[in-house]
Image (cartoon, rainbow, N blue to C red; front, top):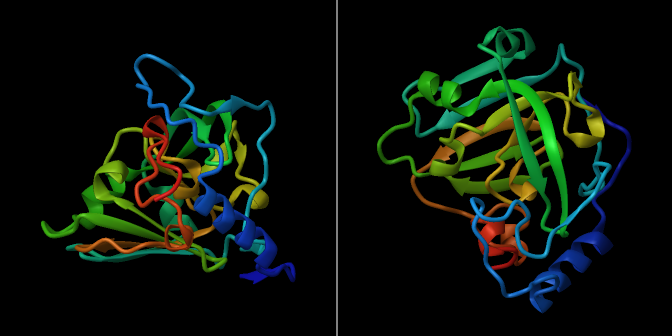
Length: 218
């Protein structure tokens, strides 16, 4: 793995922290996914915006590894070949970004989260998941959102390998939460008994991030 010389963007981070303090973009409205396709405050876009912390890792497939550990019965490390040897699934879902854009009908290919869970077998006390990424980004979520039929580890988008700027070779996709929870450049999945905040959660963003409840900030 190497990066292209990018650096963390302190001004961007400060701006996001300020938005959290100010409650920017909040409508004060809740919705139900079975009644409305767009969560409160969201607008549809036609192209996929690129958002990151400023670091753009370049990970050769021969160097890529994914560790899955913590409170599991069978921790493992997959290299690219082992990951692609797993049963593959296709899924379609919408992206809801906390910055108010929504991209509809994204077609993903990858490995289902429930297949991962069946292999590693989380221990009974495991209730949370932390994603760790190659740019040192982290984000947490309740295990129940990863243990869902639409959650996956994606390597392709609309039939093409996932572009580096969108988190390739592999990113998490957790459609029922705001997209900052769907971590890019995934390198480790940690199962935990106790919750702890990730990068944005420690900077004022909501711990769960349900777009239908408009859980942008916490």
